[in-house]
Image (cartoon, rainbow, N blue to C red):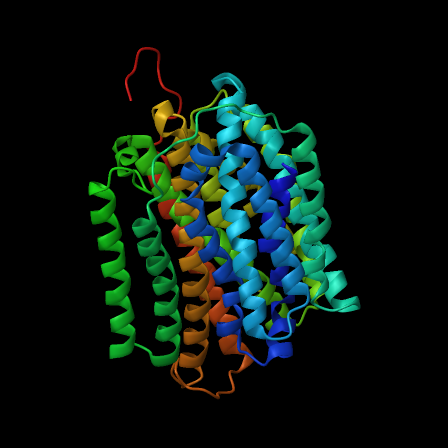
Length: 457
């Protein structure tokens, strides 16, 4: 739990400092969001290496490498002299996060019986979300009082604590090392596919629907098709596509992709909205998010217990509806005031709390045990891929709509956007998120969850 807290905190606490980073390094919002996007891209790519790393090196060594990379990335970000250096540090943090997060799900599935997994996942989730709930507040206060570099320093003690606890408490799991070679070609294709997808969004911002943008879209599609084709024929694939033959896994990954796009898109959009359009300080932005974070932390243990008793389609579907409703309300009442907006965010985070334990367990636990490591990594990969694409897409959408209403195009370098246009663009962005979660609720209605006695996969 502490390791997951450290890795997730590194990805979320930076959001309240994005306007300060934009001013510090002289980059626009469409560029500064790369601080979040490259983190998610690195997380996404590294996740799929976890099954091979577990087979070759075991839990302890994989975990220690993750914490060492997290420490190095946090220290590098705090010392960054340039925007490029900062982006490189975020890549290290992202790799660490990608290694650490799937381990948590694998350990829960291995350490607890099926009737206890929901409860364990709920308790684990409480710890994971509580720190990020408080993190934006602390990050906002530190940013205003000390500077943006403080949001990187705060990850260092967590990484050290997690490594120390792992050395003392994480059991050694003796196993024969997996002699299968690492799928380097698959990793290279994956490392081409994910960044190409993100660069496509950058080119879309810079050039609109021009030939250069179309070229990057083709490159992304070719990398994706090549990756799938290679993984179907290689003996020891990085991505074992056979796991997709399980129906709940297919449905769960679709929901996870939409969930990631909406969740990470919203974590970018809300702080930018309240600081740019409503002129809140970074500290006020963090305080606004605090009640929602606490509501999320309190909901998850309850939802974890309920997930042992109720079908996942009920919890996941109702959670998605609640999360979507919160953004529908923000789209309808963007000037509702501090307290009303905080309550809207609380509604969304309660819905998110209902989703988290059930979705991951329902997606992974109906696969055969031999595919557990692959399923856990692929589930997290899909969620983060949705987040990486969603963050870029929603930022570009809001900027494009604001400029369009101001009589300019997306590629116009300098344009004064009136406040009413900016406000309306953010409202439309919230509406898009609401629609995404409504779609996810429809897919979630088909999740089955626990395997019935005697049922085959």
